[in-house]
Every structure is written in C-alpha cells, then in structure tokens.
Amino acid sequence: MKTKNYVQNVIPRGTRDLIFEEAIAPRVLGNSLMDLYLSTGFKPVETPVTEFYNVFDHGKRDISEDSIFKFNDMTGNGSGRLVALRPDNTSPMLRVATSKLRDEQFPLLLCYSQPIFRNHIAFHAKRDEILQSGVEIIGGDKTEGDLRVMFTALESLRACTAQNGCNFKLEIGHASLFDALLSDYEITENEKENLRAYISAKNSGGYAFELNMTNEYATRLARVLPRLCGGIETIEKARTLSSNKKAGEILDYLESVYNTFCEAGYGDYLMFDLGMVQKINYYTGLVFRGYISGIGEAVLSGGRYDDLARDFGSEESACGFGLNVTSAAELSQKPLPDIKPLSFTNGAADVIRAKQFVENNCGGDRK
Image (cartoon, rainbow, N blue to C red):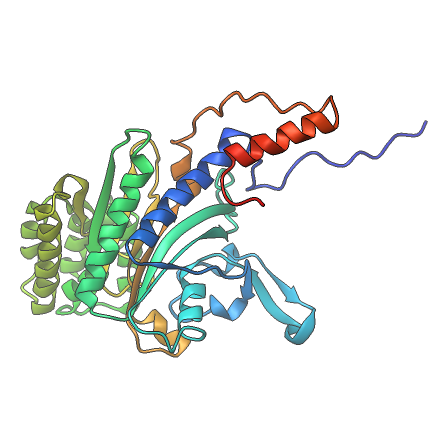
C-alpha cells in the first residue's frame, strides 16, 4: 500500500507562526517607535540580515559564540568566509557608522527596527527570532548622549505601554562601579570574574559557600551589591561601601542623571540597580534596563560602550539601546476589525467597485 509523502507541518524549535493579531501588533508598535525616533532627530539605517561573522567576533562581544547562527558563505567574493545571521544590531550599526558614514557630521543619531536571531539552546521556550527596535548615538558629548539615550528609552517604554495601561520602570546603574569599588583591594582576576558573575545573577544568599572568597571586602560586596536597588537612598548606601575617589565620582554622576530626570517629571519611572554588572567588559559607563509589568524579563537594555567603536577602527564614543518589540507587542494585541472581504462574483463591475474602494480608503497617490 502506497502512502503519500506530506510536507511536514511543524516548525523548528525557537520559532513561532504569528496569526492575525499576533502578526500585526509588532508592526504597529514598531511603527510607533520609529515615529518617535524620527521625530526626535534620529535617522534610520537597515543592515543585511547576514553579516560576516567577524563583525560580532571581537574583544567586546557580549553574545556567546554558541548562540550565533553561522554558516559558510560559498558564493561571490566572500567564498568560504564564515557568515552569521544578525544576533545583534549594535555591531552592524557601528560597522556602517565607521565605514559608509565616516564622513558624516558627528554625533550620528541612528535608529533601526529589524529582527535579530539567537540560538537559545538551553531555553526552549525563548524565541530565536525577535523584532528589535533601538537607537545608537555615535560621537558627541558623553553627558549629552547619556541624557538623550535615556530620554529616548523612557519615551520608548511609554510608547509600549500607551495602549495597554501597563506600568514600566527603567533601572539605571554604571558598568565601572564594580571595578572602582574593588580597585583598592587585592583580588585575583579569576575571583573578580566569579564575583562579577555572582552579583550579576543577583545571588546574595549562600555566597560564603559558593564563592569561597579570600578577601573579606569582596565577600561583603557579594552580599550587599545585589540588594542595592531603589531610589536615591541607594546612592547613599553605596557611598558607605568605599571611599574610593573613582567610585564616588560614579555615584555623583548617577545621582546627577537621576535628579535631572526627576526634575523633568520622570521620577516615578526610575530606580537604581547598582548590582547591574556585566560578565564581560562590554559596557563602559551608564547602563540601564527597562521593564514592563506583565513581562518577566527586561524588554529594553542599553548604555554606554565607548570602547566598542575602537574594534571598528574609530575613536568615537557610543551609547544606545535595543528594545524587544516582539515581547512588548504581546501586551498590545487588539482584535482585528471584522471587515467583510470585497466581492468579485460579478466580474468587471466588482473589480471597478474594488478599485474605487481602494482609491478612496487606502490613501496615497495611486494614479
């Protein structure tokens, strides 16, 4: 007995079919965010979905090698070179800024809305493809850049919650605070990186058993830093940890940024997280993460990464953020209007009526 070979109707792990409202919501939100960026002076850039792998394989990479989809390019002049599906938008933006836009006036204010791809091997429920929207500021005054990128991040979160009434928060910290706090103490590089990873994971319990630190001050940081979250009182608590000059300057700067936005009416949306440390030295200054109620992880992350541009041959400073439109849009889905399809049962007469309907309702010059 012969059986027909049907095409498989399943999709790869980490992917999803978006049906009806699921398909339109990310586009609507993405358009709202792009309108925000354009209206505040950013200019759009689109990059290829594939890049040569070395665009992401640099000293400041914050994406693990295993999470990047990569393959050999066997066509054209790039024959045999390793190619990757874009896992990140910052590196491609810097590639463009330091090549095709190197003669433009700085600072460059760039924005984008395009998908990224990451292989979440250990997290089967996570999406491997997400629509990401964001901005990059390359060059210019650093303080002005920090204020601009934070303002844009806050307004982006507001745009994500405008239709669903959800609350949002932007947590701010500083990538150099951790190193500054430890600079007056002797600690091995291995212990330092273990401590960094430990604090990043917000694991403040059982530290003495797992870290096995030889330095009492480092052990204290493991206990205290993950809990340094909250309002302006957080800065005062952090000042008691060290008299280091650099640490004091960082805390002064964070306090000034916080006060600036509080004066502008954003105080209800801000809080400190001084335990926001990275496992690698990707960020160099102000860092922040955005959260929306109803979503169990950060939907926005960014900050200052001045050293990253050097990997692309530029001495310009840089800061920016990326926003997970795919996740944020899940809270904004609305039922599609129940529109009756146009009829074409009467041939040319219905085609004429359909043409007139489109001309009257779909806008634009269609002649």
